[in-house]
Image 1 (cartoon, helix red, strand yellow):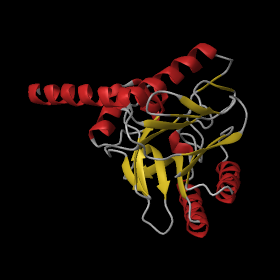
Image 2 (cartoon, rainbow, N blue to C red):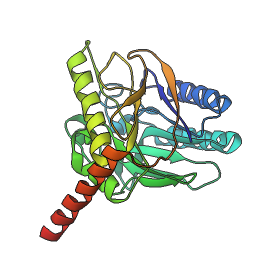
Image 3 (cartoon, one colour):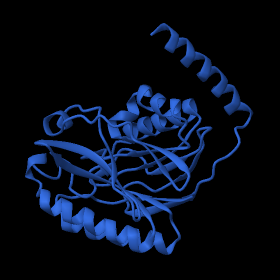
Length: 262
């Protein structure tokens, strides 16, 4: 599976964000990409940084934009995961929306809500696990990378690849935070023996990476921060190596112990 992650300066103008996303999807298709991902709230902007609050979005414009992406996915035979704000049953959700060619839309709503998220969103209840072209994929959003438990859920379901959408930026350069979150991603990959693809927004200063990390924690590809661009990586399922077999053995033993004690 050829993967792509596109980082850009997300803003509060849905039409502007949509044009960037559509151009990136077309470019990805020209590069024979099967799945392209975009940052958290990439379509709508993130409250309260890009927009005053989640209730300021135009729900109809969001719906029309998703329909445009669906048509593009159908035409180009490409899968798209894009961050949006969604409004359902009088509640707003921080949503990772999966648009697949000629298929019903699927999504994952962020569950770990803190700070601005608590002010703007309701927590989701989906597990965030989907199959795309025979690859079992888990999806998580931003702050959730801090918690091993959210990724242990994915390990229990034997995902082949995990995806993390970020909107993690700062008003000034913060290399310490960038490396800390990069370290979280490496650890989540190693402890669950599962590769990770992440994507982040870039403005004003990017504090989480857009990168691909393999199941042994190797950062195979990473975009330069603070610059718009596309990462492309060819992902394949692989047989576990010696170290991965050992980690899986003891992970499975520990999970059985925990399950028995619950």
